[in-house]
Figure: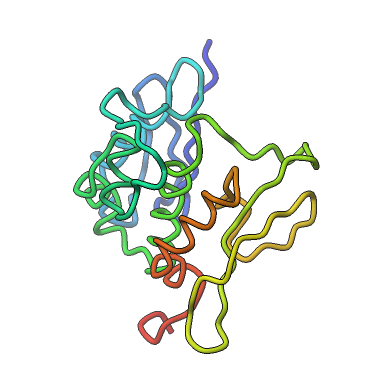
Length: 187
């Protein structure tokens, strides 16, 4: 018997959704999540390996320096802005949460395909953009951490190299600002 895939979205439903081989159980959905989003979530997981699905064949291999818009990010990972919006629209996410979801795609698009931070390897540099808030919000450089847990943008949002981190920090400054700061609209 295959081990079921569990997608933890308990904050959106009264009972945890258990997904196994394309079947799911959900009771009393609190939002308009509905059947469509569950099917989209299923597409993101390979039911045989229980691993996230790699970018589809429609993913475009590009140089990271060619990625200059969120549309470019989506194209590089094999989706579109429209597909992204279809997944997240109507979920009632805070702007910083939506920005975080976008930044996870930015990291995936800009890092080399298949690169993952190895948190057990203290010799692997994990670069992340650093921002200055003294006179507004602006990109200030890139830093790396070995094993310390301090970071300015979140450990999941790190890059394989300083050049990739610099590129993301400079190009997607507004998205990082949305993620890292509280705006008047959020308070």
